Image (cartoon, rainbow over all chains, first blue to last red; front, side, top):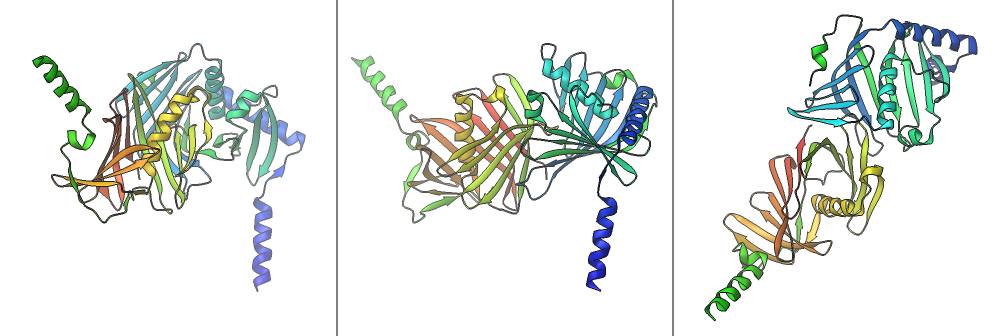
Length: 205
Length: 201
C-alpha cells in the first residue's frame, strides 16, 4: 500500500514537473506572448507579493493593485498590510507612503530606465530579448515557464533570474525575481483584466 | 570673579553625568542582567514598516528582524517592492554586513546602523548601576563601549544611549503586547536622523 502511495506521488510529481520545450514550442510561445503584449493597451490586476528570505519562518505577504497603460505608465498600489503606491512616469518615481508624498528624479539613471522597461516588459510578459538575457523555456502542465537570466553583470548582481509563468493564452501569471543569495520576490497576479479603459488620472501624484 | 564662578558653575552643571542631569536616584540592585525581550522569540518574524528621516530625506521600507539563535540576530531592510537594501548579522561580539546596496555602502552610515541595531536587538546586557526615577527603574549597561540606560516600568519603555555625558540616541518602545513592541522610534539628538518602526503583523 505504502509503495502505491510513493508511486502515485512520484507519478504526480513527474506530471507537474517542468520539461524543457523544443525549439518549435518555444517559438510558438514567444510569438503568442509578443502578439498578446502588442495588443495590450491597459492592464488592471490584483496582485499578491511573497518576499522569501531563507532565514524567515514565513514569506512576507503584501497585496495590492497594479495599473498599466501603454506605452509606459505603471502604478503599483499596495493596500495590505499598509498603503503605499509607486508610479513610474516620465523618468520620475512618484511615491505615496501612507499619505507622505515624494518623488525621485531618475532621468539621469540608466539603471532606472532599464529597470522601468524591465518592469513593464515583465508585466506584459515580453522580455524575449536575446541580447539582454539567456532564455530557457519549460512546459509545466498547461502553463509555460520561461527563465530570463540577465547577461549584463551589473543587472545580474541585482537579479540573477526572472522566472515568468504564462497561462495558455500567453498571459503572464507569476513573476519571480531571484536574487544572487537565492532569496526571491514572487508576484502572483489575479483577476487580471486587459484593455478595459484606465483613466490617466490614476497616474497623477 | 563673580562671572568666573558663575561660568564655572555652569560648566560643572553642563559636565554633570547623565544620571545627575536626569536626577536619577542611585539604588542598590541584585539584578545582574537586564533583558530586552522584544526580539527574543526564534519562531517569530519581526516585520516592521519603517520610515527613515535623515536631513529632510524620507525613505520608506520594511525592517525585518529575526533571532537566528541565542545572541544572534539578522536585521534586513528592504524596499516595499522587495528590493534588499541592507542585510546584517549581529551578535554580541560581531557585526557582519551580508549585503549593502552600493549607494549606502558608507563607513559612517554603517557604523551608525551598527550601533543602533545592536542596541535595538541585544537581548541580555550586564547591569553596571541602577537608578530610579518616578515610576521607572533605570539600569545602566554598556553596549559597544557606550553607556546605555534602560528605563523599565511595567516593561522596557526606553533605552537611552549617552556619549560624552549627553543623551545621543533614544529608543522608544510603545504599543506593547505579547512581548512585541508594535511601535518603535529611534531618535538621534546629535544628527538629524529618526527611524520609525510600525509592526505590520
